[in-house]
Amino acid sequence: MKTCGFAKKEQLTAQAQYKNVYLQAAVQKNTICQMYVLNNGLDYNRLGISVTKRRCANLVMRNKIKRLIREVFRRNKQKFGQGRDIVVVLRKAPHPINYEAMERTILMLLGKST
Image 1 (cartoon, rainbow, N blue to C red):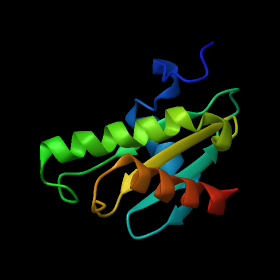
Image 2: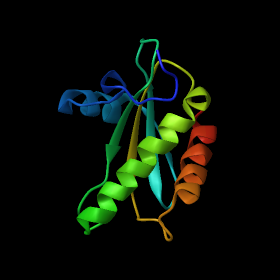
Image 3: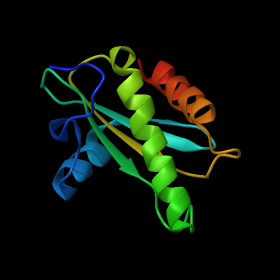
């Protein structure tokens, strides 16, 4: 298995999966996003991303933020551990929207949750 890819099985796709994480997970927050982390009993992590129109009205920016979050997850898989469902919810769009800012934010939240 490639360690730097982002396979379909590593995505939370069903509404029931998100609901389970929201109800049972530990939550870490900062001004930009919040992260829900729940053990899933699998040997790999699954990622869910929620960027709503209310928080970021521009469709292009919403998609860019989602791509950046996936890229942070893909590049830092070893730091996330194994066997977790992780949902990242955008609270406020970061300025500037770039990889470094998003990586710093997500890794800071990850450090709080471990």
